[in-house]
Image (tube, rainbow, N blue to C red; front, side, top):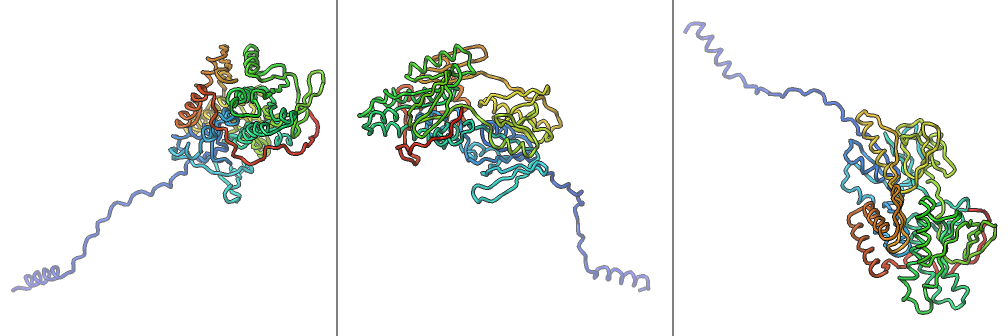
Length: 481
């Protein structure tokens, strides 16, 4: 064997004995992923008509929505007076917010009280209602949808004596007082005291006051007429007090006259041109055009006169150096944003619009106006995310409706004036359409059908605390309302 052959053999043996190193196959290194961009944060304060519409209209937008409210339900306030008079139960006009938004995955509900606004750092200051701890909720867009409350014209002490059918708690208190008044009259042997128990006063003859007076009259003269033995509920006096010269002042005069006639046929007494001077524990004092004073004994007084904006309007004005009008409504720009902060919308009954010509243009404090504002704010948010501009808000007035009683209503539909059964049927359909939830619509429709056929009111239950006897008479400071 020659040397070259030997070297070749040795080389082959070395290669054969050399340990095999596995070849590691690696995938191509991908390019570095960009950090995920945070979604646009929208905070909505208030779960009323305006706020809830804003949240729902953002369901398919690329945003994260936080709804803040101190109540866990949405109240269909236009039907609150029917809860106060036993036609409906609270659950039929109140829908849990979490239930309403359960299918909207980009929305969450925060049960908290708003205590302030930090607009410089884009934060809403809140107090958690469960723990009592202060928290701050950040936002990119803020929509404040505060509502309104009834105004007592500087006499806040009257609120305890004459509750207004605005919130659910106040509505249930009115129902308790109405039902307890009939119970107290049943056992009262002194004629004057019995007469006071059976005198019901409603202050304010707007839609709420007219509807409340009509429902009390129907309850006394139809629903309760055979349920008592010592008294005849049909002898009850229902007084509707109004400072102006007609009821339903925002309606055409013909419909106002029709509504007044319908009330009087039901047995209510309309007192026009009267101003409330004092509200006491068992009476109300009014003054007529000749400055003649009259004290009306009454155990139940319901307030439905005048409104003022939510305290949120003042908080937002203080945070933004904004202005409020005489009704504490916040002045906003034509696109419903507050001056200097285009990322902050204010909507609902708490605002008045400052037009481009400098004039104020207050919006009507009705549910359709609030809902249109909520939809508009959501639409502007969506357009801004796409880099588009928006036109100023424009309110579409669809008309006014008011019901007086069974098959009695008035409707002003842009020049088309309806009264009687047709107007009442229109009122029913409109309210059923706007009521939240299919189940509530079915239940309310069933209740109304049964009430129409039988004159019954199935929700006449006294559940809240409180006695039926009036407290000692307490005078309040005099004034005008």
